Length: 148
Image 1 (cartoon, one colour):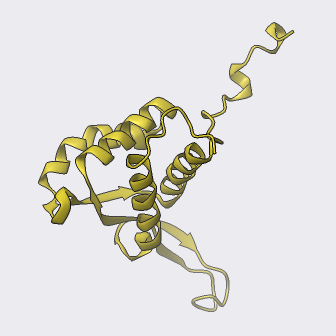
Image 2 (cartoon, helix red, strand yellow; image 1 turned 120 degrees about the vertical axis):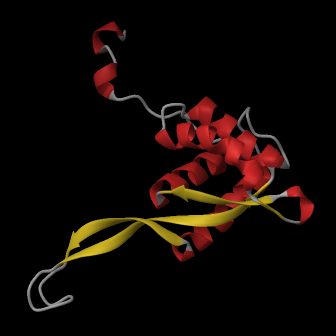
């Protein structure tokens, strides 16, 4: 099996496991953001009705400092412009305020959109299989006349 050059056995395996566990409990977390949704006729009432629907959940996740730090470094190397990457780097010092548990991990509240969490998981999973790729550039950024 061919691994990505940033793949570190042990560390990345634990990161992948933590992300998988986070995905499994994501929708049981505390609602941290909602969005307006227009129901279909008969779905909630005879007429369409505007309701609040949860769009993001905050979950308590166990991280070791080194694993979370390395995840952030991977994201900074692979997808430095993602807002999630910047948010994780900005909030990383708050890790020390998490609840300490056995093994040196701390329970910290992680608050991202589910799609972002899945994208991170797929990135790390792709690194394990050697299938990771940097984010594709938008074609509007490419000068096609320079390509021979």
